Image 1 (tube, rainbow, N blue to C red):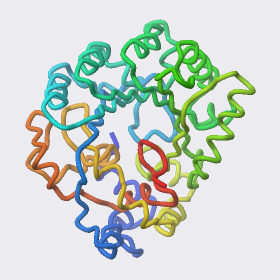
Image 2 (tube, one colour):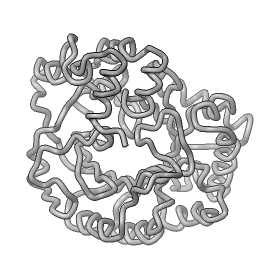
Image 3 (cartoon, one colour):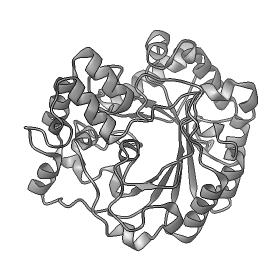
Length: 342
């Protein structure tokens, strides 16, 4: 598991001083916000509960910040899922965002989604698509339709070579198969009310291109080549943690990439970073300011540190915990789980 301490050790072993992660010779992220009058960074509201159902996954993607894979044992148990349901019922949260790993591989996944659907909340599932082509999960696309689930899926390119390079051999063909099945059920079709969105992240040490222009390219190529349709494309910046950090260190591009993120800081997106309206829940119930802090095990600054003692008012008044990796969310057009911020 990639922890903050492990990340520091990797940087030290690669010849970087520990302070390159949190306290670079460049301006600290917190100082950038302080210059804007945004520090300490406070929540605007808590609208989304993003829940990691576990790190078990059928894929091993080279950019995965969760370090998910088939050998991971971390799975959210039913007791914690029930606590999440309790929070969803009793708070002003409007969206439940389910992630992993492959969230579908949690043994209580179907039960949990069906319970959430009764609460009138928007339910998002972040699917890797390929899981929908395995025999045990062939019913999931129809299940999604039955419960009006919004599906968000990683699709780092519209070409086979680029996708398979980043996500594994055979992933592209299985992804297209899953997208066609979702399209057959109405997903991604105008007027169907069934939302299907794709996610692009760069394959290397670069920032994403302009989101709207890339969406036009994706829609044209996927339609022309495979007759596949979708609603929106989200571009997401790779943060320098876990497997992507390993890639940067192996290629000798860590310092260059951090400089790129820092020099691309965009004040206009800092106001709207996703940690200001989202709480991240780890597979064991622990609370974090965001999914990236969760993977680095950077705890939340609140006495309400677990879904079991979730206190909405306390969490609304907390200071959001920051680090140099936060530059990844404020570089260029900005980055969030819903894509670019401008």
